[in-house]
Length: 107
Length: 150
Image (cartoon, rainbow over all chains, first blue to last red; front, top):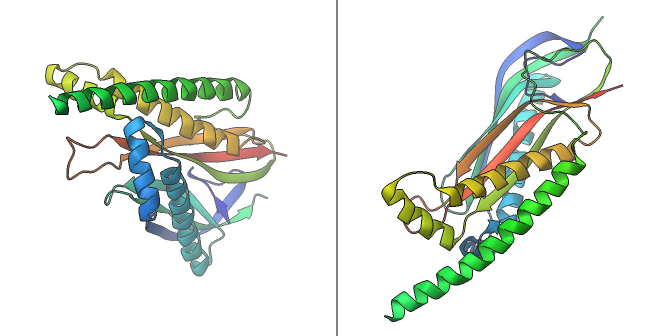
């Protein structure tokens, strides 16, 4: 499946459109990692466990979006956008959305 | 009296750690940015970019970073915000976070010719119920479309 965050797939033409597909996830790490991050927060720097968490959440949100697109029979998602929001302390929400389309090579 | 002493000790320790971590991080970022200087060019708009060459692969690339300030920075900023003006202690934190996220994205797209339409998304994930007490943490995602020519 091709994912792009531009309005087309370069080198290909869109043959069918299926509309908006979305995927979202809210994830949290465990209490021990939260405690560790709380300590790290005091001294400053990057919170590695939360970065990991964010990257897992992003992966899952995109995966769900792809599944939805696959169900519709699409082979690409264009104009993908990622949005994040804070739900509660130590949790990450990632929301991915885009337009499911069918593309074919040009010519 | 004991409270003030404890506060001063905590401020002293976090000032030291924060400064050391920030210095090391900036050095690391600079090194990696120099290494990537001729690698994929980023930030073409979606509509302005155009090519007639054959394309091998198109891929969505992302880079994440969660960055946090420290207790000292937070304390200075809360004093500074009383008078207004630039909160320099937080500027450097957010700058580091964004550059780190962009670098991670570019490192994932090493073989690509272009990364177009780069976007940066960020959110504060600190304790929203107790904003005065908590040190800011910022979660940043940078993403774009990596394009590789044949």
